[in-house]
Image 1 (cartoon, helix red, strand yellow):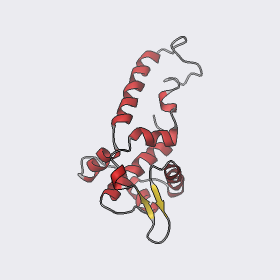
Image 2 (cartoon, helix red, strand yellow; image 1 turned 60 degrees about the horizontal axis):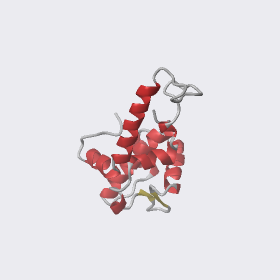
Image 3 (cartoon, rainbow, N blue to C red; image 1 turned 30 degrees about the horizontal axis):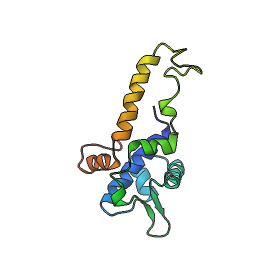
Image 4 (cartoon, rainbow, N blue to C red; image 1 turned 30 degrees about the vertical axis):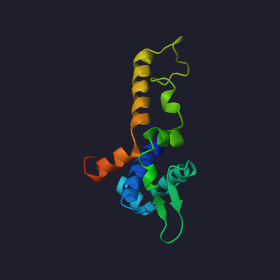
Length: 144
């Protein structure tokens, strides 16, 4: 459903948020170890997220990635997805057809439209704080 970049980005931002809640910065090495992702690819994803002002990139020996503590609750999952994948998740055909709309629907068009609507609602209503705290308390995991 999400691109690989978006999957890594979401996992990385959740981890960075968890560290930021504990007033710590996350290094690239820590992030990639924690979310089980390739370092060079993850670095590019993190650059996109920093450019979108979702995370802060701090350079230098004590550098790393962080999120302002007071912003963690206001960042929604939809912002992360939009920064990395755009709005393509809400468009396009569920079966990959080039043309699929209400006038020329594919066999799953109506069902997929409903699922997409629920997905949008979930992404827009899920805060980074909610995800980071469930990770902190051990209710959720970033890798297996």
